[in-house]
Every structure is written in structure tokens, then in C-alpha cells.
Image (tube, rainbow, N blue to C red):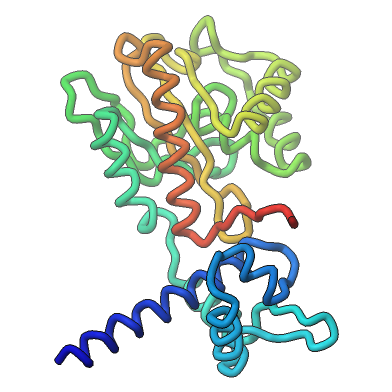
Length: 265
């Protein structure tokens, strides 16, 4: 029995180390040598060589004999395509936005760009007495909502400019941005900081923090926001909320297959 238990533990450890090697390669743009993988993972060199030999033998990795580097092979492509084909942003995001609501106690929206607005495809209400009247299918304007500004900010320039040209810039409150140049400057700030804040721009007494969700290619395909009454979301609460929302947005992106690329050493 002890021998079997030891074997089970060894097998799990071997798989774990193989995944370390796979993740190391996935986080780099370029192919890596065995020495580079060893340095990045901290695994013993002999272990890395065994893992690489196994993965090459099964077609998961390919070896460039001239450069002595390793990269993903056809089996990795097949596995990745199968996994990505099963992903649905609403389904994948659901447990994370539930966690976000539980953590903050405020309402969470999941929205996508649709025509000239941000379309809500999922919502979890706050359990507090003061809640939001939005609903799944509700559309937020792009120029003055947290999710709208986020989705607009991270579009390719030609798409973003085409959308800005069609925005009516309706003024909802005294804080609403109503000029194209002011909006462009604000969108640049959103891209630089990685999130958007709506401080009573769409509705008096309502504030929110929003962050982008990326697919496996790095494209922003959705946004989440955490919203509540301004009297609950003062400046200190907003600062805390920014990190919490970013963390959950990043977790959703990771679950969708997005891996931020690490710069070459």
C-alpha cells in the first residue's frame, strides 16, 4: 500500500512539473532552451530534460535542433483550440462575478460592446437595501458609463474613432463628458491605468469601477463593473475597489486563456 501511495504522489508531482514547463513556454513569445526553462522554473536540470523529452515525444512540444530551443507542437495547438472552443465569456465569468459581489457587497455587471453601447449580459445584485435598477439586456452609453468607457478605450483606433463619431454625447449629469477631445484624453488615461471610474457621470449618486476582460488573443471582449451609491463609494472605497475589480477581471481573462507575455530576459 505504501508503494502505491508513493507512486501516486510521484505521478502527481511529475504532472505538476510538466505543467510548470508548459506554463513557462506559454508566458514567452520566443522559443526557449532547456537551460532557460531550468532557470525560469527553478526545476532541476535533469527533471527539465525528462519533461521536455516526454513532451517532444508526444508531439506537445517541438525541438529546433539547430538552435536547441523548444516551442509548442501540433498537439498543443489541438488541445488549445479544443479548450478555447468551449469557452463562453458569460459562463466563464459567472463564478468570478459572484465572488466579486460577495467580496464588495455591491452590484456587478458584465457587459460587451454591441453596436453603439455596452450591453449587459449578466448582473448580480447587491444584497443591500439600495440597489440598481439595471437588468440583463440593459444598454449603457459608451461615453459616460464605467463599462462603456472601458470597452471603448480598448478598441483598435479605427473602431474607437468610428464609435466616437457616432456618439451623441448626451449629457446625463454635470459630470458627463460631452466633448470628443475630452473623451479621447480620458480614454487614454483609462488605457494607461487599466481601469475606468465613473463618478456620477451617468446618474447622480451612482459611482462605479470597471475593468476590461481579455480573450486568449489579448483582445478586450467584455468588461465588468462594480457599482453602488456614491455615499457608500467614497474616495477611499473607490481606491480599494479598483484593486479588487482588477483582480477579478484578470482572473476571468486568465480563465479565458489570456496569459500576459513576459519580456525576454
